Amino acid sequence: MNTIVIGVDATDRSFDVIAFARQFDHAHLIAATSFPVGGAPGYAILRDTALDTLHEATQGLSNVETRAIAETSPARALHDLAEATDADLIVVGSAHTGRLGRVLPGSTGEKLLHGTRCAVAVVPRGYTERRVTRIGVAYDGSDEARAALEAAAGLALSFGAQLELVGVAGLDWYAGPAIAGGVGYELDTLREETQQRLREQLDEASSTLTVEAETVLRTGDPVEELIKRTEQLDLLVTGSRGYGPLRAVLVGGVSGRVTRGAHCPVIVVPRGAARAAAEQAAA
Image: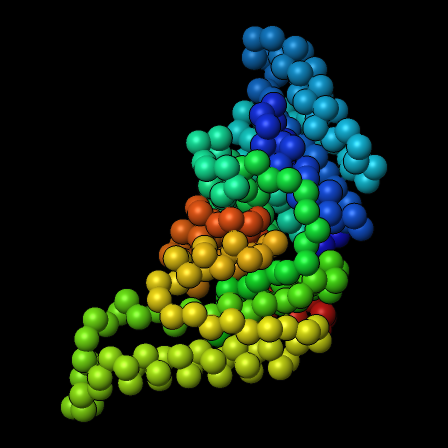
């Protein structure tokens, strides 16, 4: 990732996002904060306060640019800055109401997770810098999962980290014997078939990678199993939901719920990212 926009404010979560972004030592970092537009009472004071916030938050960072943006909405300020700079990633912290060590997007994060054209990372509350050695990617064989896998593989190569493909065979769509084509299948048979299909998808995906990867297969509720797995990861990458605008982050279902409870930073990759990259490479 070449350009990363970091959302900064006057709260402790700014230190969380800086601690995470600091590890992208080869990227161009842009720390940004917003303040009310001109004409608001105390405009100059608010602008100077924003500049002071940026200075305090970014102390010790050598590869960072700072931007104080006159914009009432922090989410819009970060979105527009990412568009203008062609950023690859926006990093935001978790809400102050979240549990320590867990991810919970605040209002700014939620807005960015519903329409931003670049990837969005949400960092757990109270995050402290630690070397990224194990990166997980939620994988189910969909186009969105393949986009997430491509991004995760690139990050694993950049960090020198172990890549882990995590697949969860969800069994919530049946609760007992099912009928298919007039033939009864017992629960154990359905479970085995589901696991086998997902295992084949995981193995096929890992065989196409240029980086070393492990596969992890779990059975149960996908959200619960992925959140549980994040206790063993330094970073989780997920895809967006399978409908909505191309090249836009649009969380929903599993990815949306995982970003509200993970134990490690979560990066959500925009829908259609893999296709757009392939088209750009072929142009």
